Length: 209
Ligand code: GRF
Image (cartoon, rainbow, N blue to C red):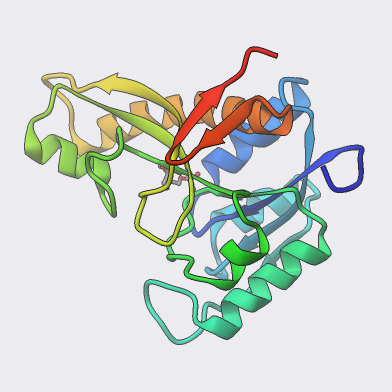
């Protein structure tokens, strides 16, 4: 922790912000000893910014730059600077739809995490729950992982399976996956904040301390 007191989280998102809500509720319930120092979005009208503002959190839109799927170098620097100025200990991606390439990962080495709606390494990338339905697997799930330069390829921190049911539609399946996400993401963040996650190469271990 940078200030020896509260563990400070920066959240990046492009969409609905349901994981942000789950994290704030876990903090309110005392299950996660942390504070959300900053919420950033690449989408001006994103719900996540509205949720953050309603909860009195510092929330900013930073224009994404010229590319569609990643941040350009200068923009990634702006995100990184904002997070550094907010003195965050952990960068939490929650539906952030752009790939991070360089600056931010260098500024926060081993301190950027993401949640993905499948049991990685199955179904990386967009529409993971639809990929699972199309493939006809019996289980998919949710994965919390460290972010590296690849697509959903960093070391796995936590996973939980979700069964596919016979009557599932993409919407019903995503809904159940997201209920799982809302449980495992705050827990994984708490594990990191409390120093319980140990990394060895591409594996992580949860200590019992
Ligand atoms: C989540 O399903 C997450 O797995 C994916 O994007 C979605 C974000 O949802 N990376 P929300 O914005 O937190 O509601």
